[in-house]
Image (cartoon, rainbow, N blue to C red):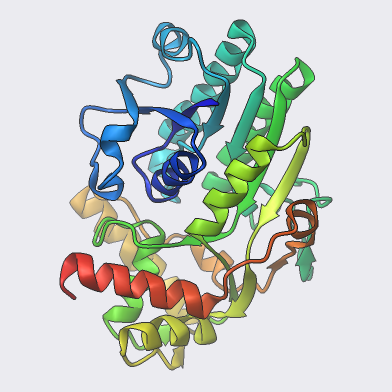
Length: 328
């Protein structure tokens, strides 16, 4: 198959490209002139690249000619309310344009990379499955709202004839670009031997597992379904202990107290306004850091007869890759 990939220069997108190539698919991908290619070392020249804007329908119509399937992973991730309009334009309107172009050109297979953030959560709930539908709650960040709205555009495409498969990954672990944020920042936090950890739980999954599942679902006859893609859930203390062990570092042992969170949120707000940079810790992320949700993976395990890598395996592999790449 000839597959069009969005978000190909990011951590997950780069591994999706690798998985597609390993399974003898042709890959065509979109990037910007400013896109960094660091994560595509060894395979960049095996990909047919187009440079353009996902909100440019004329560009999309030209780029998607001859494509058999689309894996859509491009999205902006932010919890800073100043970025809400930018996220809506990219995550929602860009997805709507992509869906419309697929419908216009008769491209049927559409695999969408969403997030567990787009699945409904209620106070006091422990286990969350694909049956839990979205509802407004205090756990819905601006990012979660954009991913939910993005999914609505994809489901609209399904109503109009697309063979849709939606993946809802939790925190994707893998060797991304050091110092550039994203999920690789949790490894940086462990490497720097920080003292504090949040009091809640985190859900996690290896980037290689998400990529493999995305491609296997693309190749399958499944349609009109969503799948939570998560290896498990652990308290942050145990999670960071595992990451720190992978680096041979001291793990955080002190729990962040609620009053500390409020202070950090306030200080981060001031820092972001003074510097003009994005706020990394917000009221939304403070709330989420205290939750103890467990996103169930039974559905995808059964559908694909799939077993996830352990946190230890993911942490050790990622740490080794990062140490080698950045001489840590």
